[in-house]
Amino acid sequence: MTDRSFIDTNVLVYAEASDAPDKQQAALALLKQLYETGTGVLSTQVLQEYCNVAIKKLKLPVAHIRAQLDMYEQFEVVQITPAIIRAGLDLNQTRSVGFYDALIIASAQTAGCNVLFSEDLNTGEVIAGVHLLNPFVLKA
Image 1 (cartoon, rainbow, N blue to C red):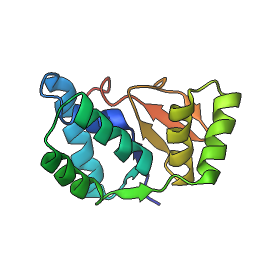
Image 2: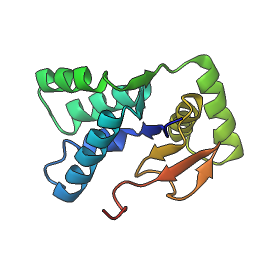
Image 3: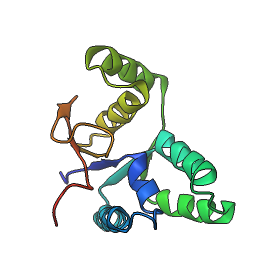
Image 4: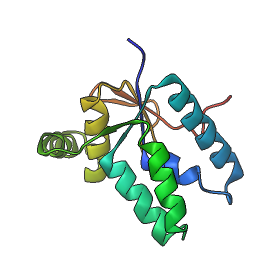
């Protein structure tokens, strides 16, 4: 089975961040690789968070955000369910992970991902069988 990788919101946000060209390049390269190999996974939570940041912080045109959503729909998208929320609550309580980060980890675990690409978590740590990696500190 091919390794599957979960993509956190910050990867999508940095793909738009022309003010952080190194992170933007890393995010775009990662997204391209995961798309081409068919191994990238997102969740409805990630897409919602991306839209919120794109509207409020990045002030991107809605037409651009819609086009990005069309592209991101080509990845597998995990629907957040009550079972994932329960798993997130458990991780929040047992691993001292913030609730929304715990939902991301629970989504990655549910989708069978062995890697979670995120800037927000402790790179190198393994939680619920998911390896946390910061794609912005990895060397090419």
